[in-house]
Structures are given as C-alpha cells and as structure tokens.
Image 1: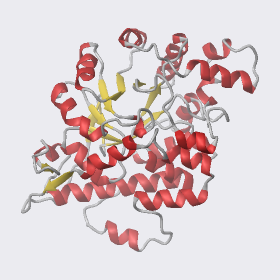
Image 2 (image 1 turned 90 degrees about the vertical axis):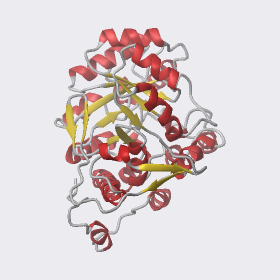
Image 3 (image 1 turned 135 degrees about the vertical axis):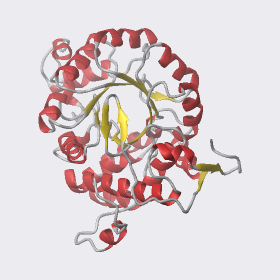
Image 4 (image 1 turned 90 degrees about the horizontal axis):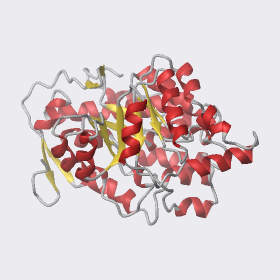
Length: 386
C-alpha cells in the first residue's frame, strides 16, 4: 500500500495525470454513466424500499469522533492479524458475485488487485470465474471462499473441498440468503445476472453439480443453480457438518443478533462477519454498524469480527474498527472501480480508501488499529458510543 509518512497523499491525488473518482458518490455517478441500467441497478440497489441500505449509511453518520491531540502520530501501524497471518491493512474484499457483468476479467482482475495490494480476497460462490481459475490468476493472494449452501448439500461440501484443494484459506458461509430478497430494482429493469450466466464459474466446474443436470445446455445450468442456490432449510446442524468436512477456518457471514454470535462460538465457528448483505436481502434491517457493539460485547475477543455492509469511506472503516471490529470488508466501491478501469480501478479505489483511513487514524490521535479502541466515539443522541 501507499507510504503515508510524508502527508502529501491529497496533493498527489490533486496533481494526478488521470483524475479518478475519489468519493463514493462520484464513483457511483461515473459507473451509472458507463454501464447499462440492469447491471448498475443490481449493484447499486437494496431490497424493497431500501431502508436497510439507508440504515447502513445512517449508522455511520450517527457516530462522531472526539480526537486526541499532542500525540506523536508520525508512524501509524495499520496492520492486523487474522488466522495466523499479518496483513498491512484492516481491509478485505467482500464477496460480491457475478463480477463478469461489469468487466470481462471479472473476479480475475479483482483477485490480481488483491494480490498486488496484499489484501485478503473473498470469492463468491456465484462468481463468473471458477475458484480454480482465480487461484491460478492470483496464486500468492490470500483467498477465502464464500459459500452459498445448496439444496443438495453435497454440492456445498464439494465446493468447500475444491476451495481447500485450490489453496483457499477460509470458508465464509453466508447465512442470510436462504431465499432471494425482494429486489424491486431488478424487477423494474427485468435483470437477472444469474439467468444470464454470470454465476456459472463455480457451478459448471463442480462435478457434483454437473452430475445432477439432465444435459449440458445453458437452460439446464440455469435451472440447476436456481434449484440449489436458495436453501430455506439451512440450520446449525448443517454448520456443524460443514465444520467436520473441512480443515479450514469457518466464518459466518450475515450475523446481526448477539444470540446468533453466541451460537456461533458454541458451535466452534472461527470468525463472524457482521453484515446485512449490503442491504440487499431483508429490508428494514438494523444497520451493520449499529449491530456491531452488542456482538463485540458477546464475542469478547474470542474470535475475529469483520464488519461488512455500507463501508464506503476510510472514515467508515475507522469507526467500525474503533467500535471493536478486527477488520472491515469493502463491497460496492471496488465493484465500481472494476467497472471503470478493471484491475487498476480496483487498486485505485482500495488505495484511496486505505489512504483516507491511515490519515484519519493519525488525525484521531491513534497510532495503530488496536489503538483506535481507545478513541472516544459519541452517538448522535450524545451518549458515548462505547
């Protein structure tokens, strides 16, 4: 990542030869002008009336920092330690599916950016490229595999085994997609990337899945995915069985209630991703950041907690880290970067987020990610945030 000891990052951006959108709103505007309404709406939108989407942003805006001064902040350590490895930043790539709908190189470009930046990359089950192709494209990147359960559970076990064989280092089981959320924007645009084949990478390379198809036609693939990708029967017994089937750490993505966090610990889960699926599943749900403090309290440092959903700025990441998250996952922003400039666009977006985060840590009066726990946050109602 960029060295920030000289404090001239903003000046470098100002004098850049090729201006690139800095803030999220400018990124979104640029992408809206570049790609078709269907893919753009799919990325941008939330479920239903988009209250959850708004709640995510409102949650960050509720908190204000009370900075401390006259500390030596000339050296800021942004490194974090996760599952036996140390990374230079507390950022991760959230699992976002079907990247091929915005760029021909899709997940391959994102994984290469992750490798270049040394940021862990979480690949979606519903990706355009297979996990083996991603592993080959970015062999030295830290890669985790996000698993959607399948109605035929042997498909889920097969994908987890393939990920382990390909060198992925963790399984991220998403628990909030037992059925598709009510997504009005996609209905309005009559757009389904799954039906267009953008999710075929992992499925069409899975021997258990393909063995269930009557033939190798595109229509059979689509119907096969639709029959398997939603799984309303998913429960804790499946989680326990998955744990028996893999040697990799398992994280649960989509946890918002502290009781579910307790159950995760009781069932030997290795990490939690506090997430509401970027506002794309159940509308009217608590913002992820609002859910974080209670989960941090329950977990009490026993396993890592990652905050996901609505993180659009480096300052958002800072607030999540100050409230107890061990790391923060970035979703929509990097997809917009991918749509604009492929791998380089992803790198620019993530570097800008990181640059803002590091400067902000110093300006808040901290010198490390861990030190952010000592920074005071005040909620909008005047109470101390932690």
